[in-house]
Image (tube, rainbow, N blue to C red; front, side, top):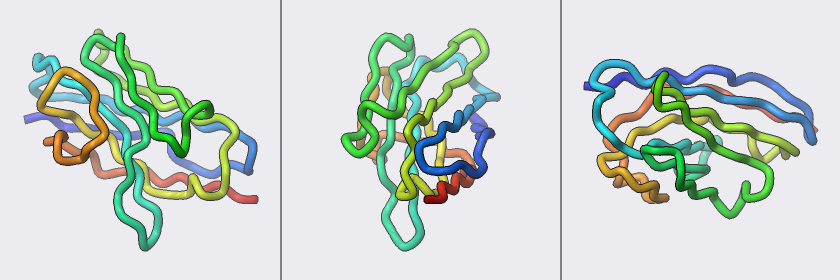
Length: 124
């Protein structure tokens, strides 16, 4: 079993930046992709970004492309979401997830393990 713990959430003004981190512990010998999803109040969970096991391949959601990047340090089982040029619509709970495949994907059905989430609030 893998446990995912997110950190780094908080408040920012529009145009600012935040960085979210997720550390995986437990059975981390599996070579799986990881991702960030977010859920805004009253909305369905939305794909944000994903990264493959080696870190060489990534996928970024259309709504954040060009402003958010995802990175990974396999040695520490950590992924990071760098969020720049934040907009108020980025306000959401952000969830870290681990896939059951090595390649990154956008579908939440490809992710088996989820963190508890971390809140991000962006003011205009």
